[in-house]
Amino acid sequence: MSMAPVRPSISRVCHETLNRQTQQPGPVTTALQSAPFSTTSAMAARKSTGPVVDKRITLIRYFLHHPLTPRPLRFSRNRYLRHWTIHRAWQLFQAQQRRKHELEMMRQYQSMQDACEELRTGAGDGGKLFRVSMNKKGIFTDMFPIEYARMQTESPPSDGWNHDWKKPGQK
Image 1 (cartoon, one colour):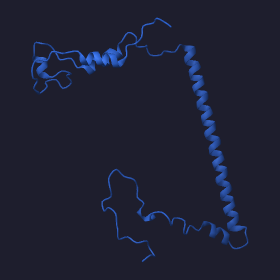
Image 2 (spheres, helix red, strand yellow; image 1 turned 180 degrees about the vertical axis):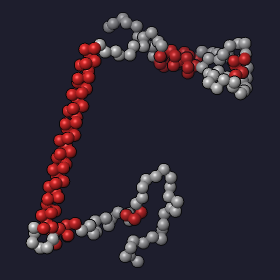
Image 3 (cartoon, one colour; image 1 turned 90 degrees about the vertical axis):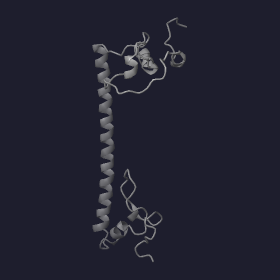
Image 4 (tube, one colour; image 1 turned 120 degrees about the horizontal axis):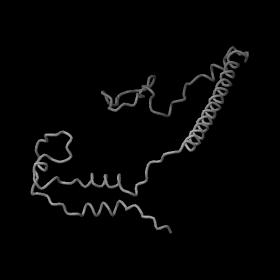
């Protein structure tokens, strides 16, 4: 096992920081702040005891600038070129896969369109098979009425639900 120093755990540091007693100079009242981006309250800034430290900011600073925080990755020229080459090859591969999928979908659509055209013109029955196959009557009978369909919005509809509505042709 290596004897390299370990980064302190967040739970231990938070526990120590939050349990540390800070001296607060009595009850603090709210006051108008003179500086809009100040991290301390105006009353605490006027006191001679010093600013009240915000533990959250202390923890953020501690973990951002801790000596064991690893530095950001920086690639050498060769590693960057290698990374870029692999990334570009992956992008080209994905584009090729998308193109293949799109061509397959176009082929299927064209095949369906050719079959429908053959039904319409070549069957010899005057296109009756085509008309019957394109008839959509009775498909959406077991669902809610399609007339109720509306775009999804952030707010409810203005008129609510119409309980007296009847399907056209039904009494």
